[in-house]
Structures are given as structure tokens and as C-alpha cells.
Image (cartoon, rainbow, N blue to C red):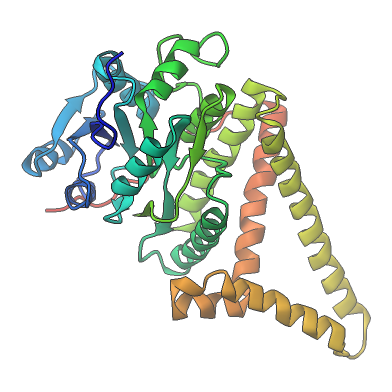
Length: 365
């Protein structure tokens, strides 16, 4: 097998796009402005009815148009990879990046360096921040993403999910996944993505880990991605994410790879129970007493909790800190996310299906 000189492995970026005229130009420009730009940028145009294709071509990207695809993002990527993977070298690199994502300029250089340094590394995931806008709903999502990024930066080798916003894969890892579909892994032989999965990024993470590939999410692999603009859109997005995670675990069962994912779901269930019991006890206590007495112990504990919430979003700036300090809004947000979890578990138990949800933006003129 012929290997490229270390550090020169060609990188092809695939941007799956369904009516992404409003964001595709910024995504492509962020790739072209990288300190280590990709050798190839290919927009995977899937059933587009807007100007996505024209804008992509005007920006200098290639366009791969799907044919007869009914399997959404995963199906479109499978069609493109079916063409590209057979002629790729084992050390070639592929980046899958959402069309509404903007990379920080060191993303690709950092990912390349990680993959060159460790031949057992199958993928490098990104750490994402929320874009501006979206009102209070957007601000709460940005705080959530800040905390996730902070946690991953502290434990970059403990990747739970390779973010669909932007991740770089070794070709050999993707080929191994395609080869093991239908036997070791769920799905159809020859396909990189399992089209039955609602959350293709989470499922591919499980597939790679099952096959023994390592992955990291370095602090310098950062990007900015969309936030849901309304509570309704956020509900639908999180419903797909959560239900997808549950269905992925069902497909893989209990294994040494999935054990911590099952325990994570149990941890979420415990969090739902404990937070709601705490809120219920607080309400009952307030209703049962004639006068409120302030305990130094509980005041100190509450202050420490607020401080933790503020510190963990400190890099987000003054507005992020103020929102965290208010606390009530974030508690409402937590209860909202937990309600999604409860509904998804209930739907899974009764066999109700979940739908894909795509938020289309107003196209650029």
C-alpha cells in the first residue's frame, strides 16, 4: 500500500446540503480561509430547490448532485462516498461538515496534525459554539454549547459523539465501517452511514468505536453552528437527537463500547428525577410555611451553584454570564430538555416513530 508523505495527506470536504443557499457561501469561505485549506471541497446537493448549487459553484466548490435519494443526509453522503472512497488511499482524509457551519481558521491544521501523529486515530471531532441570534432560546443554547466545549476541551480524548457540525475522518476508518455493515455493525454492507439511524453522527461514532478506532476533539478544532430559532424548532431538534441516541443503543445492544452510553442515559433519567423532586419539594416547602427563613447553609450552597453556572460560560462574554447568573431561565431550559427526554423514552417504549426535522432559512438574494 502506498502512503502519502506525513502531513500531505489529501483532504476532501463533503458538505451535505438541502436548500442551504443562506449559509453555504460562508461555510465554503471558512474552508478556503483555513491555515491548511482542504485539497477539495464538494457540496453534496440533495433535492435542492433553491440556489444552493449555483452559489456553491460560484464560490469555487465542486457539486455532487444526489440521484433518487430518499434517505436524507445519510443517503446523500453514502452516494458521494460510494464514488470517492474506492479510489482514496488509506491515509487520505475526509471531512464531513454541515453547510450551516463556519470553522475557525486552525481547525483543519489541528485535525491533520492529530491524525498524522497517531495512526490509531480514526477521526477528529469538532467543538461547536452557537451562532448569534435566536433571542433567549438562542442564548440558552449558546450557554449549553459553551459548557459542552469546556468539558470536551478538558477531556479531549473522551469523545462521546463526533459532532456532525464538522469532523475529519481517516479514509481507512470509513472503509472499515462500510466493510463491516451488515455483520459487525448495523446497516447495509458497503454503506458508511446507516440510513436507518436518526442521528447519523452518533451512530457513526458508535460504529468507529466498536471497530476499535480512537478519536479526539482538540480545543483548537472549533466551529460555529446554527441555533434553533424557536422553542418548537428546538423541541423537534432535540427530540430527533435524543430519540436517535436511544434507537442507536437499541441497535447495538449492551457491549463494552455502549456501556457508558447506556449509563449516560440512566444518568439523564436520574437527573430528571432529582431536579423535578427538588423543584416539587421547594414548592411544597414554600406553601407550607408562614414565613421564609434564610439558612446560611442553603444560601452558601445556592451561591456556589450560581457561581459554577457563571464560571462555566465565562468565555461567552457578559451576556452569557448574566443569563447564567439569573438562573431561573436556565432551570426552565433544563426542564424543557428533560421533558424532551421523557417524551422520547415514552415514545420508544410504545414504538412511536420520530421524524427528521430540517429548519430552512431565508435564502440569500
